[in-house]
Length: 601
Image (cartoon, rainbow, N blue to C red; front, side, top):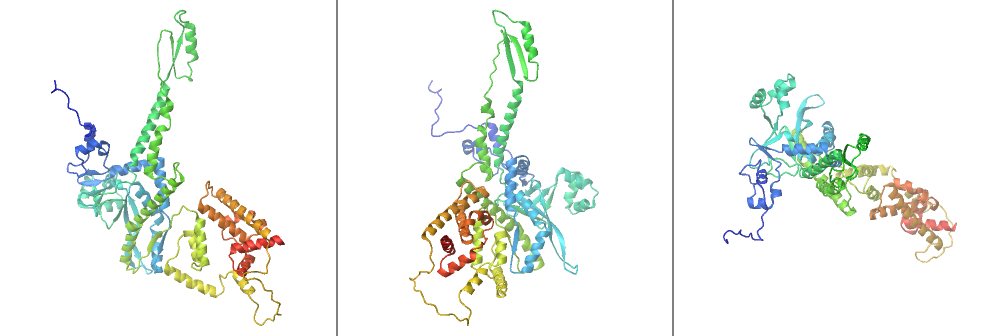
């Protein structure tokens, strides 16, 4: 009897139960010698991860990510949040490109070339494909460059065509750092090349390798080798041992699929409600059943208001258990899956997060955009520009730069540009360019602009009006006689001007109230619910500007005008400047003194 007892399993050696179908699914589509295989002991403990699908397909010695790319494309076409996330990231990434360089003729050439290839549309397609499939293949359409005498100089790309990465495969090798890629022809393309009489299609077919032409004539599946001279390939987050990049949002598809399953279940339940049966029992055991009453009730309910009616006598027993539809159709089951989808997509524009969490996501969002832009520049645009420059013999190649994407308050940057202009570090053209693009000039460009700006100032241009009047008031012209006046000695640092202490109190209180009014106007205009420190500083600076430039009666009336134009100057600006120079104080203090003196009048 003791020998038939079951042996106890030690508690410190747990095992997860895995059925045969899961083990079979986990190894499906992979070769037995693949290094991605997991030992049975580990796969049993982590069966859910071990049974995960691989995005790579191995067929006829080639590798592709067709299934993963096609699924991401279908999700983009059918799932709203998936499409909106990719479109938003594309729109923020694809901003205007500027070319910087000392050689102006070279800069001008690449600006014209970028317009020729329709760089804006190309960037839009590039980033959309980069975020959707992470694999970008661009076919170069070459054109002949001619000089002003129509003499051919060289062939350069004049257009780029985006290829579908679902139709691209790579030859299997030990390393894919410089893989050989092929364009798989689908059935439509094969039949077109086989039966078409169009000259372009015939020329394309003749340009293909002989073995490819034979396969097309037989209607067999085949592929066209892609030369690196004809196709530029760009990958996002690809390892050297991977044939192609895995789509960025491929892992999110599982959560999206789960949400769609929930919606399908709700549809089935909603349809099942149509088959509800209304049970009506008539009569009792003592008095029996009135047939006329049964007929009347049956006629009464033969309408569309009730789906199905079952009228019977008291002997019929029927019980219908109706589930709690609120629990089945309620939103509770979507909370976790919606959070997983939003976190997987890193979507900063949808969902309800705290302010600190939202700001952290904004920073991560901007860093991802910056990484995508660096990929576009370093993996595609700059190599293409270098190849063109080498062909044409350029000594210097300009540097392409994207306009910065900034989600912060632009008023802070405008204040910075104004201050740089006041210090003479920016010319008038550079200030307006900075307002428009948020880009500051390079050192060599700044020298050229400053020399031109100096010549203009020597001619009397761009001189501050307040400065000129102050110079005239500083002293009398030479040779003007003046009668000696009796000097009035005042304490060191004192002034012969008199100011009202009561007026100072009144002006100070009014200035504090003005700051609150400006802050409320900012919050109302820009739809800000909670003012940050930057918002309060901006409101304070705007209020100080009003104090320095406007009379007290016009303070509240001028708020909207100064919010729209921080550089606004009022009618008392010159008088405040004179007070500031006279007493050696800052403009704000001079403005307060000005209003104090008006309290005595």
